[in-house]
Length: 112
Image: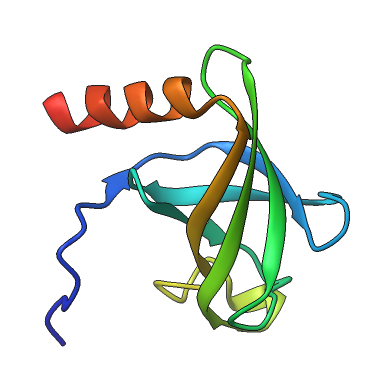
């Protein structure tokens, strides 16, 4: 099936923590964009859920952002490495801190 979205996704693996009230679950990004990110996890939240995310970028800088789950695909934990997309697509709704660093990282990835 062809990609229907116009947003450029940049493959980038970053460690993060996420959660509804507190960001306590560990996961990684699979790709990012200036508007959102894909969180690879078996601990999904339903679409529409607002989540808090603590993202650690490559220079050990910690960014705090809020987002809304736009879509999610759940698979059994033993299948996470086999299935192409397992996790949640999240639209960033607000940066608590680190927006400039995040956007700079996206710009650097797009320039490659």
